[in-house]
Image (cartoon, rainbow, N blue to C red; front, side):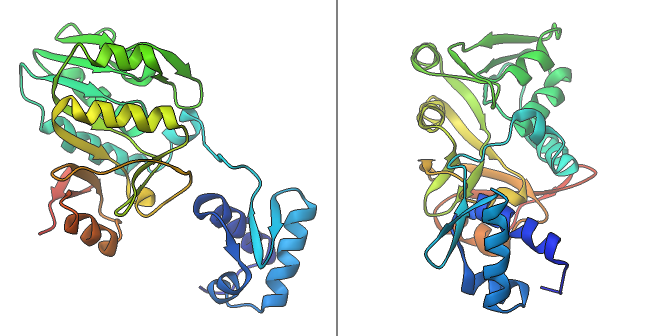
Length: 265
């Protein structure tokens, strides 16, 4: 990594600690091309400022759940999310019954479905409900329950009970991170449990995740990936992560802006 100013370096250290967990002095020293003593001074400053907590040999994020709100995430990777959503919408056929998760990328898919004909959409997300509420050609079912304000999605026993009454042609899931070994990452156990139940009720399972989420492990609750699931991501996806996912039986689709998409072999 090329040399950067101390403030920018400290900001990046906080970002790394928040998104990947523990930040090691030795790893940070190599990453930023500075001495270990410089990194220790950075960590001391960040600790004094209340941005990190010191640990033996490094530092970690203060918050165990650095979860961004849906409003914060909506503007991130906008073009990538639009391309992913467009590809996902093109898979839908008239007469199908779909299940949409909460989240900004799945919300973008809901917007694309405003032109769909003769489709039923069940959803756990407020964004999808708002996008489709006035569309006469789409029949909408709300799987209510306990609303999580940060994710703007419903979770809990009422949502799970509603799922038991329906099956779906396709389910589209969002995620905070995805690991070939661990699966789909979320901030809340209720979310990971719900995603597992949603996947079990559908013939085809899609995970919509822009490239920055691949290999990311911001939390410690997981939904295992199923063989035959489809990951839809963007052109900046790390090839090594995609290969590891394919080795586990996950189909990978890489999309590009302007609605062009390719599927790696």
